[in-house]
Length: 383
Image (cartoon, rainbow, N blue to C red; front, side, top):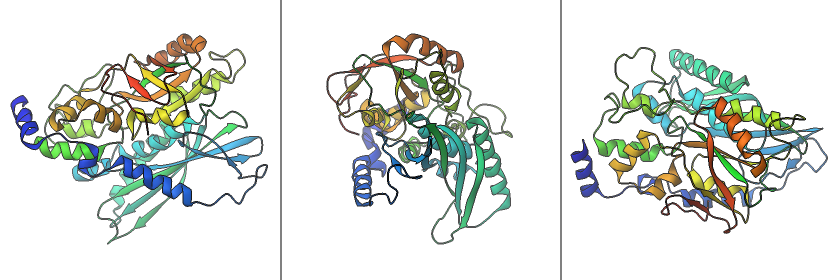
């Protein structure tokens, strides 16, 4: 396997997200153009539904009396192409719920409800039954109500199943987590991912094609990592396949992060009110997501969490450099919580007891709006 990988690297050259079909810089410019073209809200401050400014863009919020409602919309992305290819949809509903509720957490919201949107070239009751079970499991893990959804049959527009959704959450007025109170010396706590989650799969599929491996083949690496277990397809026996690893569902961080937020609002809680400064969901854009949370401060990852073997395999087969890997994937760390230095140790211990592998990984720095890393190759100055 090593010799074949080395030959592939020499013959085909290095790969990145843009060459596989997704240019994140152009995507960012497109989103900025969309936002610039959107008009101001019809609702004025003090009215129900008036916008609540929240830096970072992980979720939008509106006024709702003494509370604020938060909304997030996302989909499973091209991970679905692997799921459709294998005919294994058991995890994609969990992915869809996860990508939305994990964003809500970042603004300090407790997720409440979820609705899904399914687009298919033709309806198949057995497929929808599997999707329904998966969405139900995702909502159970996220502690939210599956409040409804929509199925659209669109032959000629979609060629295979697509899945997205919207999550609704809430936080008390003034209780949003925005990053505006960040200070130099605040501490970063990393929470481990369950693997690839639901980002970067256009590059994953390109690497898979280069590798010559089949999704049904046994994983060409030791899939075990710390306390992680790859979710098995219920009717599969024997060794874990490459497809099973690539389809491992996205981790949902409602438990323990929402519990931490609620604990911080409780008198005498583990982290006094204001001790949680910012939360970042490490999704598309990788570590550059941290730049969304403050206009002038930087972030240094001094002791990164360990990386799961599938990331190492992707980097090796695709000859993907370390900076590109950290810009495209979560690299073993799916969420970062920034807390005050005084709260760091008790919060890190509290989180580790509830999610094994969580620990302090770095700090907020003064070197300007930049992300730096223990690997000097990994550095980001723009999202």
